[in-house]
Length: 132
Image (cartoon, rainbow, N blue to C red; front, side, top):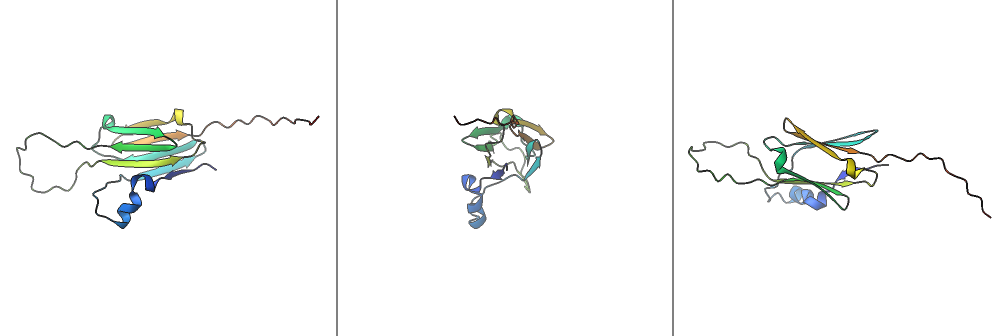
């Protein structure tokens, strides 16, 4: 059985649930599975694809964005602010059956979609070896 799971201890998600003192942001994620593999969708409106980092290391897929402060002088007074673009880091633990070299990422309309195909199984027939 192939698994794809969030790795909460890597990015502290559980700690933030119990101790909500941090200003951590975790974009919503949809994970789909089909016979060819998995797809991960992250909701990341207002972020350019060049600003997102996707890294694979030791079986962990990490998707992150580091927000940069706007250093332009403020011309207008901000009356109300209900949204902003925040830094985030999401980490997923990948099964060895995922073909890491074939992972693909596309960003359209504020949705980052990663395709994680399974490695092709070798369905070669087993050879019977006789004992001499």
